[in-house]
Image 1 (cartoon, rainbow, N blue to C red):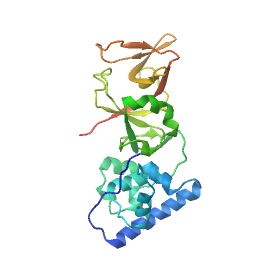
Image 2 (image 1 turned 180 degrees about the horizontal axis):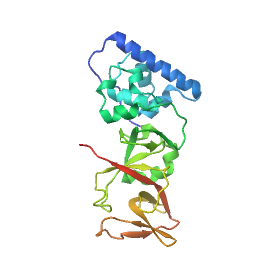
Image 3 (image 1 turned 45 degrees about the vertical axis):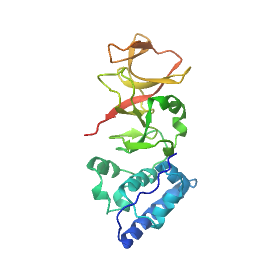
Image 4 (image 1 turned 120 degrees about the vertical axis):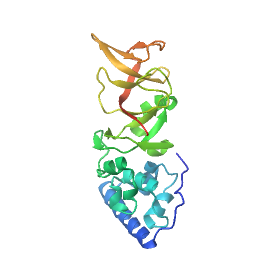
Length: 245
């Protein structure tokens, strides 16, 4: 869990801060009415904050909302940012603004819930353990969050690629959206884990006859083709790369 605290920012009109905090409180109460187990500690965890104090300060208006906090709270409590802060909503990047406009309260189910949201970014080293823990993963377990860039299910995450097996399709340093709830088909790029050593690999799923294989795109990669036996588990389908311009 990170130790991030609400960042400092320029002074905001106290009346506007009060209005935003009141709107945020109303949304929180509505979500809590629908889910009695919800509390500020859970909201803080979803936002990646070390304690519920940060949530409380925004809800009471002791600290004015900033863009980062607004996006995290919007994702944690499922509301369009403009519903709480008309002041900040116009400052959001267009892609995030359009996607966030679809944020609606949802139950925790494995279906596509919106047109995009903030996702945790993990590296290949952590991916093996993450594949097993994905159902119990909490937003505070990741230090970096970026927008998914499109539809994802509730359990999606982003993989930071280290290896060269998928060059030229995927390069080291690329960030790929992995979705555990989309069934992979032959031809799809998938994240697979070998259970005996928890190692993970990003490969293309192939089928020949009744057998399935994991195939590297890089023709020079050692062990380019791996037969998919019982010791392999597919963690999820790669849906897209996140590209920053």
